[in-house]
Length: 351
Ligand code: MRU
Image (tube, rainbow, N blue to C red; front, side, top):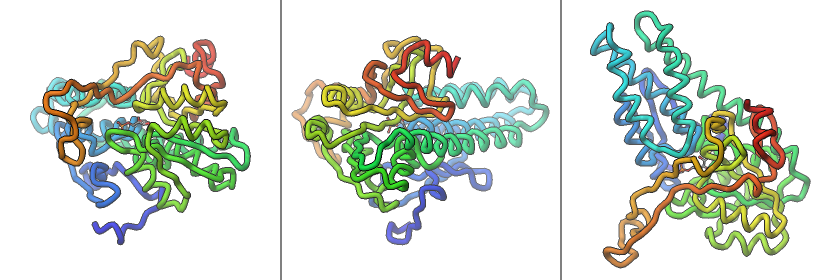
């Protein structure tokens, strides 16, 4: 589809769609220059799409995995109507392993798996219904978080966000961008800044594009300019999403979130983390135990397929970091807001 002909609205827009028995993903590697949709009818191909960043963002990969379980069950059932529960396991493992940090992936597969024992006959109809429910629940949660988060924001505020926690990263509307959308529509925001988010540039390519489509003025800056901007005293909020939140309120999110949060604390900027309950992992005591994905180093030694670092250089490419709970002012979920998070407050809502 040509970008000029694309009719965008954050509510009708979907990074993940289930159409006529097939999964359709908006290829986020191509944005903002091209709108390309890719169709999938096999779970291993979906696992590869998740790993390769066709679809990304914690809730979006959870929803994608839920639909991929439908594809896996279809193929297992075609192989054997007796033993489909055993035959599906390899595909479920591939999906679970596609990306390790966002707990939503694991959560969605576990939710789907819980129905297996009760299914009689063809599993597809039951599983489609549940995957659709997971998708719809995420959209509803985003709208509720958008409402709750915006209530914390005073008029004439300026916010900075990192990575993309918008419609593209979720079932629709977005977590951090849901709050920003709602606050903007209520006239509370005078400026929104997006940091570019090296190396995949989710801020530059995705957040800027999403906000621009909604006519929300956005100012793009490089990641290392964020602390200097906060020093100006004009920024009120750092608002970000999360890939996993531990039982003590520590937050795993896109690499660079931690340094933004340190700078925010230093400069008196409030930190709001916006994430659905499916991102909370009460099995994990603290952020130290959250697995951090290390991606291929050519993502940082090369740029636009051209080498930018000397050959044979050692490089580190962690995709996420942990922001300790003590740097977070609010965790906003659809179940409620946790202010100054700690283990007791988290347990009271998510126990
Ligand atoms: O590597 P990505 O693009 O999947 O990382 C995405 C993020 O870190 C988002 O901030 C997070 O998943 C929340 S999305 C609502």
